[in-house]
Image 1 (cartoon, helix red, strand yellow):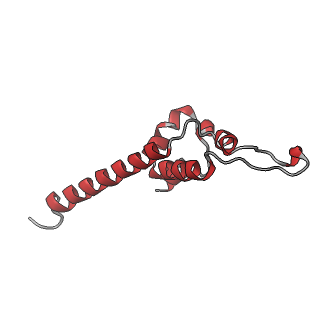
Image 2 (cartoon, helix red, strand yellow; image 1 turned 90 degrees about the horizontal axis):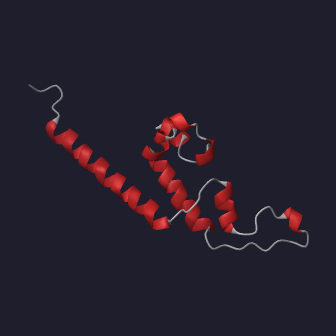
Image 3 (tube, rainbow, N blue to C red; image 1 turned 45 degrees about the horizontal axis):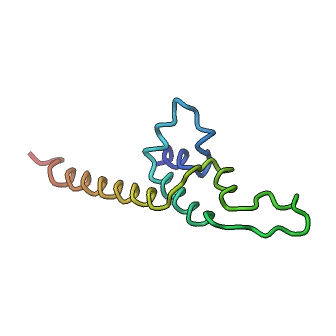
Length: 105
């Protein structure tokens, strides 16, 4: 779980993950949850900056997402992938509980 959390987007953005470890991020449910929450929070947001624009690092939420390395994030895609992972884990858990016998002969 710690490995999935590390590559989920909280600590390392997609652009900072080494290429030879990049496959791990696609297995992490934290990645899809973080991207969905970020898309919900930042897409379509326009920030009003004070009198000095240099004090405002981002003018829109899309700039925030691109800064975090999230390009073309679609909320429903991330959500559907999470639902698919949930169904997969439930099925695998059922199979393990139903057919794997531990201690009984």
